Image 1 (cartoon, rainbow, N blue to C red):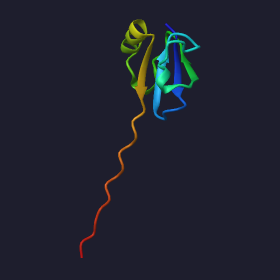
Image 2 (cartoon, rainbow, N blue to C red):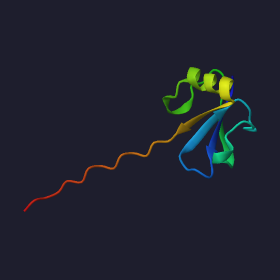
Image 3 (cartoon, helix red, strand yellow):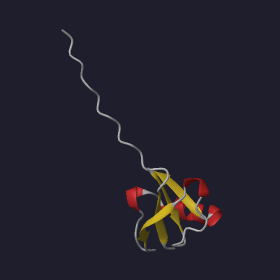
Amino acid sequence: MRLYIFKSESKPGIGAFAGDGAGAKLPKNFAPWRVVGLVSAKRAPPHGLPRAKIEAGIQSDGYQLWRVKKPMPEAVAEETA
């Protein structure tokens, strides 16, 4: 199965995979959606996401959402006098 990669333009950090390039079944509450990539059937999805779970989500719901996690800020050391 080809996996089309979408990003939400209304909610930064929300992405989705769909089985069609139009993203017809993507949730409206995160629209508009922009297609940003394609993963062929023989390639691994980005970010180490499991293909089997993505394909299961597409089969049951028509899409699989994913979120880009913000990096944790580094701890700031405090000096004591």
